[in-house]
Length: 452
Image (cartoon, rainbow, N blue to C red; front, side, top):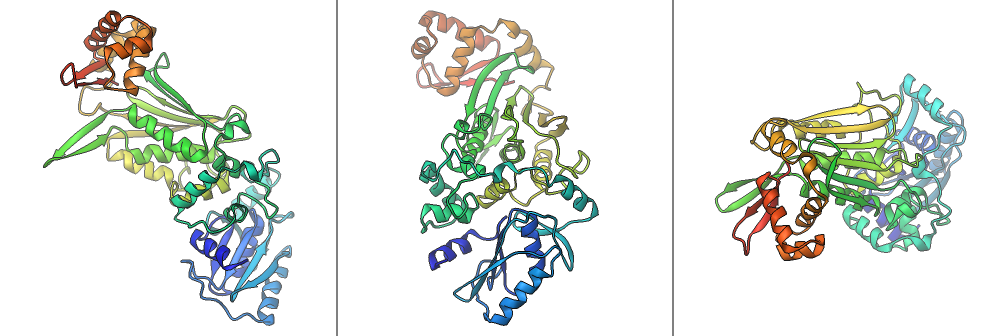
């Protein structure tokens, strides 16, 4: 430990493997919580806000800490170090879980140590034979393979200054051990293409014409690190759903069809909770005329049921959840579904959850931005008039227009591989069926794609 590393940890704040304590009060529950989870360090002499006040260090105090550890059931093996009047207690993950202290059984969840009730203790014991994917060491991914730019971007998002060697940064983030061995969470966050190591680690987004998976208007696979997967998936949804505009004075406010914060939360939750052990566990974001469905493989983790979903903070991948929490992609654990529903309620969007081997969250609009009801005139305009008659050339033209709404007929001809005359004929058909709308003059105007 040195001053730079301590400063880094204080900036980083409390998390899955770091706890700050001003005094000895409740120290034993923090130790058993770490032992029952993935291990961690307690910094005695530091306030919850990360202020290093220090503590009077004596041999008697060290002995008292060791006594607390020995009095746990079963006893804990800990190590104690001192730096700058701060006592650092390292608690390894236990091999004979669960441990208890005088006040009960505790488990580390995110930045908090939570007491387990009887049912949770029973389920905890049952789950002990199972491995956590994100915490497993990855022997194929080496320290030299870490993308330093991704680390820097992560620290910037987390509001942490980087003044440490990369190995120490990764250790303090919990994605590497003291020998520099990277775990799976480290690969997912700090590798440009984690799909090289996990074939399932990507997100597929698709925009369909109508209400079924027949005509694909736009599609993309996002295979970067998990943070970029979230950002790019949200951007895909934004560009493939409608916008309304509210004019106030001379300012124009954009009003998205679906609350961006709810979509981001749902995609983040899918990445955080998916079962990475399943080789076919990529995430799917499907956009239809009147709904969005976000799905990932993985049933609910006990003791959570469909009825209690959103009330408990149970995570399949605790370190991934902790890292996303550090960059504020996740707020308080266990509250995501409630926030999603609250954001959508204000927009008149229905949110439903289906759990049957897959976890599917659906967002469904009750009306189309103040236009016709879904399934009535809009369904007739798009579904019946276009239906099966949408040609491959027309689909390609729509894809190119989405990429560049100012694209000319000449450019469309080059990209699609048909004559300019045929492009103009197809543009006219798409305009008549309501798929396309021309805004502004022939020169200087742009296209709008009708999604409804």
